[in-house]
Length: 260
Image 1 (cartoon, one colour):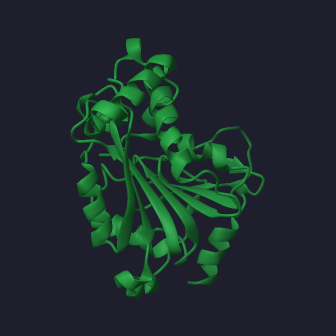
Image 2: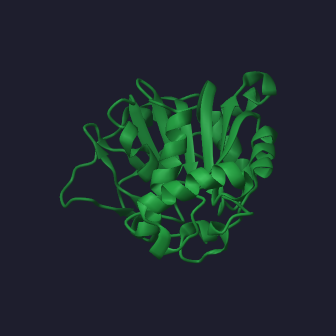
């Protein structure tokens, strides 16, 4: 069973969640300084990490697993979050330039199928970053955070899983070296732990990040012909952020409908 979207939202308003967001964003900014003019997919619960890119990106869609639930996010075009299924994402092939997976892989019932679907909806030479709990770190062993749920990974395990689904891993990194303890997770202390950990024990980070690229020569082009489903924008299971907010059809949904 996945962590609920309510628990994820509560976590990112806590001191531990603020520390996780800051340290992952610090790493993500080195990989993706900006996403200007790009189409971006956040799978799982990527809101805390992609919010700062919304002004520059051409579009950002948040795809949230149905077992988790979805928190509605609005843009000038309407609702940009959708409930999805791991095994069939409701998007046309080769839509997204960038994909961020956070709280999406650890509890996936079928990880290879999910990675195959993410490969399908990405453009050639598109980049994906996966953020997951480090099996050697303390955060994977704590029930105080969502990173203690599901299966943790090593950097090598994530890289191998991406290779199996046709991606080419590029960068492996770590983040969040501070122990998951509220009393010592102030921003000043977290930054000190981060600098020390990167130098002294790089393999013991709380989280691991792996960036990979979609390469067509990896031989996965045949998966582009899968049937498409309509995304469930709005409706039951989506948490409204404001009463009476209207929901509009996003252009990416129109593209999916036109390809059916």
